[in-house]
Image (cartoon, rainbow, N blue to C red; front, side, top):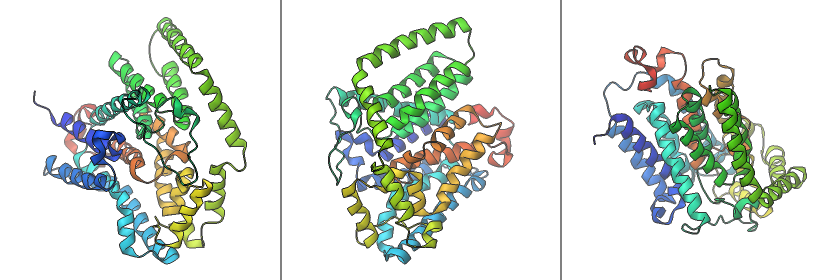
Length: 409
């Protein structure tokens, strides 16, 4: 069976996602971890340029690239700030900033122009992989990765329940909203199945913040965005409620412990996330310049990096404050880029439902998103899908405008 270009791009994107998530930390995919991941990412970048090369791919690229250039400028300026504020030499910065190789997949996306269908297929395959890994960890087939911390080995309440060590859950949450949008547009068994797979992966991953948004948003789309008879909707809602009740009753102790733990943490002034916010916002910046341009991504070879390491003994991590941590590291530009897209999408009347759901999740859950490694593809997908759905012919070749956009994209 010969694959069309859409399917080839789907397969390619799946492997890109798999590499970006360190091969889901599976034992037989260890070669995708550590520095090998960045070598593989570089090879995938080159492969994407040559494998999907076509002479007339360039129109529509440059306008969407403005976000890439802004982010690249922010990273370059933050390198300079790391030198000025923390005396981190440029050679060290080049090595440390290898984590940002994923940024170059932004222009690659605009170059190969994957359709929403291609992206959906890749994310669906990734969601299935995540479910398999979660279940495999729960029944002992796959080992649960040990996340080593400086300050202790305290386990999360839900660690015993599911895949606390599963990487890629943020991508799964984003894929869930894409599948929900597809289901709302076309209510078919296939689309319902895709939603159930992604939702299952989110639940099995045992990430509180992800579930906090994913579950109510899924219920909202099902109840108010899907066109079906009232009788059928009531019947399906009843069956879903029975399954949900049985599930939560059998895992009741875990959920009660979760609620108790969350309540205690949010009300505790010594909760490590509150301490992190207070320290990085009020005490870490050494002057006015870092407030706008950041402190940079620091190595243990300088005082700033060693300070971050020592804070780990207190359970204070810059990544715990999400986009605020991005601001502290790289300045205000990446923060503005992300929230520019979020606000524009939410205020737009033409943006699709799936993109609005993604922006609600990302915009109102800032502590779960950073500008490093596995998180990067959330930002890349938002940038690409936002530009793809702009009602401007500048983002499309003229022949695309005259065809069925859904099939081309």
